[in-house]
Length: 251
Image (cartoon, rainbow, N blue to C red; front, side):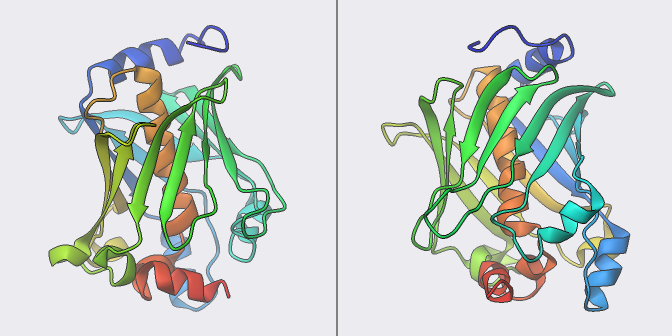
């Protein structure tokens, strides 16, 4: 692993991931946020996620650490606002995700999220590049070498008309090697009557496929969370016309 030795909690966490073929990431319901959104003025609360292995066992719990005032800025400056999140393993911080504040405008100064262990040793980073009507992310190791690209394209029913049935109930993202070979897949599943009948809001399934290195699996988990923050964290992205609804609200 480049960048030094991982901290003690991160090492057993890596071992757990070494045996996982897939994980499910379940965002937890935030009742205050849902109620205030229904009233017309959403109050951003801290995001929380359960991360389960192939058999449904909870292996990690992710908790956003962004302060209250900064969280509210995400509604008006989503591409610029900073946030940070801890991934816990057995109630100890194993990994941390940090997306610093940037002066992002269109293709200039695009957001980059850094993934580190609890001691600050970098595992890699995720970049959200400027693309034309496409959802794409690049994952790199600490030296800057590209490991894989995650691409959701732009022509999926679940992006424009999210519904809990048929082709509208999911959005699929291919995990591609630098040579363009398909390695695995990330799927966002759209739920019905989300916060009223369930204890989780957004579900993501990360199928690692040919991705074997535990550190690269950590990057893919982090990428799915980054994706949720970037494109699916606004209630309008799920309830008012999918991605198009979210983009329209930001204009």
